[in-house]
Amino acid sequence: MAVRLNQRAFDHAKSLVKEKRVVLDQMDAWSEHQPSADQENKFIEEHGFGEYGRWYLGVDDEHGEETKGHYKFPYGDFQKVHRCGVIAAEVRAGQRKYFDIETAAAHLHGMLDELM
Image 1 (cartoon, rainbow, N blue to C red):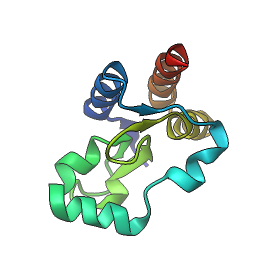
Image 2: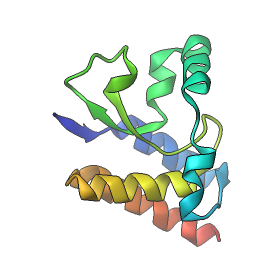
Image 3: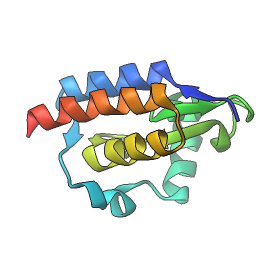
Image 4: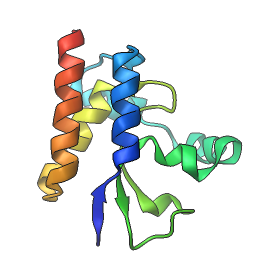
């Protein structure tokens, strides 16, 4: 699997944090805050895969860009960055040794903690 940092998504997330379009929630809240498959499908239908991809810190080159499988490590709800989503991405990327994604998520995590 060729998973790497989605720089476009990382830049988008940093912009959202700077605009304070964030939810400063706790680490274990992501299971409740993460978009459902239906919400993802609706977002793709309304905005396309290009916009959808801006909400995922990782991309998997083994899957086509017009598939959900191409996008990994979500960090928000298509409106705001969620601290719990960033932390989940940071932890999972570290476990899988995707250090570029882990580092990007850690950077976002620090930005969010500064707002708290």
